[in-house]
Length: 147
Image (cartoon, rainbow, N blue to C red; front, side, top):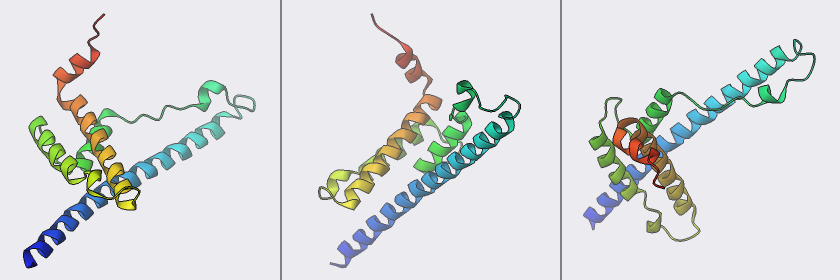
């Protein structure tokens, strides 16, 4: 019985660690988005008097993409990997995290299942981002079109 309790506590600790990691990345992304919106608003305010009032439609939409290095760093943080991680380590950690965040372990329509699905989606996004950066052969196959 004591072993079962220990295993349960360990699983909860791993789950909470994964949850905290994903929530940290979400908070960082929200802060980055807020900073971009403020910078965009400041740019519009600075440009609007020189343009004679209203900004043009082209300047109203500033692209919200980040640099490749930032995307890669964020993906590595989600997976809990060091900056110098190789493709084999990424794949190993991805498999472990996907197995731990399996939503089917939770009952339908529960907050735990929704959170597990959200975490799994974040892990998938991070893995796909790292594949683009680390697996160059995969990029070649993605660009290949068969007619």
